[in-house]
Length: 353
Image (cartoon, rainbow, N blue to C red; front, top):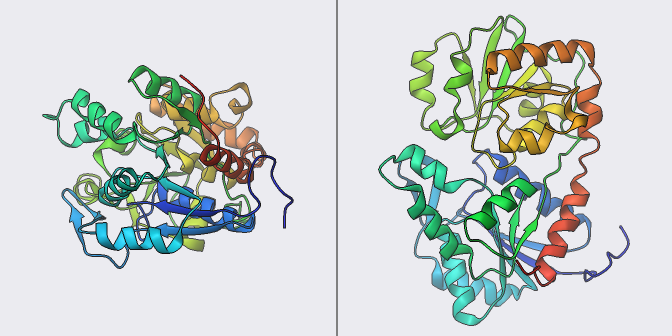
């Protein structure tokens, strides 16, 4: 068992409330799964409140996401029974709103996190909804939190510009024991293999990847509301659906280049998973990729370019030139350091902004 962490109690009871959980497969879910596992390894007790086992309905246009309804009485009892030392509200969905209401009603301090560019996502799905209106709602949601956690410095600055305050960094790591190169693992398709892992949805800008003229085979891992239409439009793309466990690990390890077409992701945990698996990354020079692989140390593991085809071909060349560089890069992204950031964020007063 690791020794005590300066400024953090040896044992905390931490309640995490999230609308995103298995069987969803996305960066938020994997981040929380890793966080809970690592908090447990450090000796803390974690209880996760999720939609599983609760009265729920599918989110319109996104049935994979469940909205847990009429949970105030039940959740209030759960909080009372657990008596947490810290409450973290991870998402702005139905459960998050209910937990926020209870915390404010009973004077319970809580932290929140800003995982996704929600305003841009809503606007992409419902163009008639102004982004400014969504930003106003997000400020309302996060304002009472003692700390709002952001994955990168770029996102922190952007949130400050949108009127948020008391923001602290909570970066992301990768499980390098799970995600790893596997000798001999190959997809049974013509190479090179260009891989995308994530939600298959309009806000992910996935069609910018699927429409590229590239040699070999494009492989998509994930589900989402755009999947059926894209399968019909791009019959030569291999859509494998959502994968978990060792199937997901082998899907990464069997590819050559990871393509990340999103322009709105605040981090992109899948890029670290791909790098840990030995893949190079091709992406636009958007905020998430810039923060994850845009520094000088990323020059041998990723190509960022407004011409995504050029980025893909460049990333393939990098893979051939520096086959060990992606894994070495990922090994420097420790999940334990991210967990310690989270712990310090939930028990200290925020910096004044």
